[in-house]
Amino acid sequence: MSIKRTTLLVAITAVVAVSPAAAGGSATITISHEMRGCHMWQIGNGKLAPNLTVTLKSGTALRFVNNDIMPHKLIQAGGPKLTIVRANMNRLSAVASVKLTRKGTYRFTTKPGEDYMLFTGHKTIGKDYVLHLTVRVK
Image 1: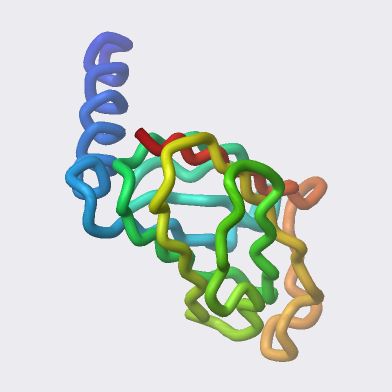
Image 2: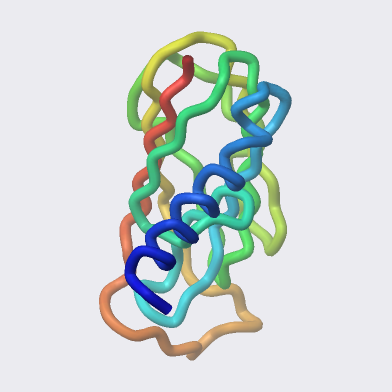
């Protein structure tokens, strides 16, 4: 596949991944397990990344789903104060949520815990990523 086609495909994927959220309503960000780096963010079906920036419309309900092999506590690191519902995502498929009612730039990270008992001894490649998420609300 040519570089131009690959670039176009990535751009289209990014637009499609953010489109449902751009209309307001809701958006979902998943924390998933990866062999390299252990965990990453993903919005919709978009690209996996340890550092993610998204732009959403004011009023969007943002859901975080933990599909990693370890628990995560969602932490707001900056921006207008929010209430995080169920920030302790301490089981597989646990969901935290926030309502983005004010315009601004919000920053999130997680505090990961130890692997769930089912996955004890599971190996990953390299250092575990520290997750950073920037959400711009317009």
